[in-house]
Length: 425
Figure 1 (cartoon, rainbow, N blue to C red):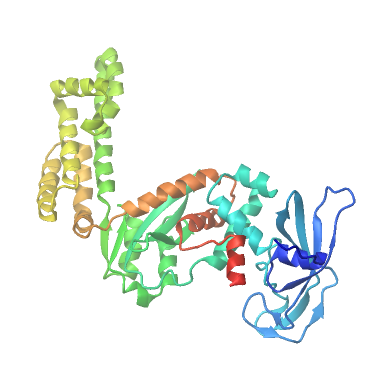
Figure 2 (cartoon, rainbow, N blue to C red):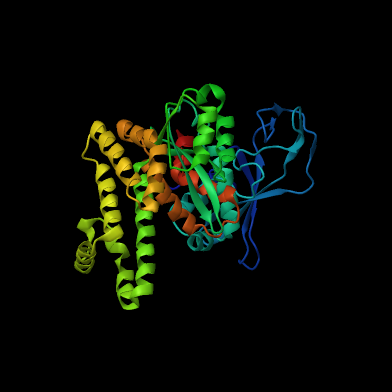
């Protein structure tokens, strides 16, 4: 292999591989403990507004202090890119510092550095990122927000037909994000802090009335808030209720009967009540998933009979309706029969649940008939919960939402070496 001798500035131009710059000099700290500072100049003669596409040759003035950005390390040495920037007078935004082609607006990091940090945020924990990149976790949150603001697909809301709406907790004390999923693309396309109808109203405001009237199906849970917003903004859309939530509701009704039975036993026979308290999972788990001990407990409860066993049979009958092996006609017939039976059960918890199931009957059947439900959204929520647990250091919903969009949204992050391939053609 031939070796070519080059100047230091030429070498740094190649190593930095930043677009639109020319290296003018480099300096190292005397004690070798600080960063390497690379001075660069912008090649472009025209000044570009950082907030719009406006360009001009006329400079307003030149800043007296240099601007700087943290770049990816060279070995063990942190790298600072430094440049003297000019200001321009934008027709729309007034006097601003010109944009640079290698960094995002109002960032102290180069685009390459931010892309690496955002990529790592979707793959590993905050301690690893902070130690590897030598930045604090709050900086990672702000980086994620900037990356999402520039890289999120601007056409992600175009042509939406079938949506899923769900909420996920991003922090303790009932702090939630509302997420909208495109069932076709399998991506989270929109999110906002909150979980009420006003939050979803913001989505429809951004979507626009014309596109809202193109929606065909919106899947959601059994809460009234999202249904209210969809009915108001997209009345033609069919609401699909995930059967999973209906099955969970019936399971909760069974647990109410179990607690009532336990409280009655506690007053009559404390010793039997103590043994009965461990029956919860024997009642709520699928029969084929029971341990030997739980199966024995279930047989004892069957022999005992009473309200609890009637509640258990109602729960199992309801679960069997949505096992996935029945056609829509059979499901409709069995669901109506179950609602009627539960309404006459004289079990207050099941009478109340039957009323709720009847209210959302059409939505549940729509999910069965169309195959559209919140299963995909729930699957994405599992990913969301995982990354949010890793991001407990985020102190704002915006930063947490940015991480969600990076992981589950329509964003394709490119690492610096992939950018280099594109630039080299």
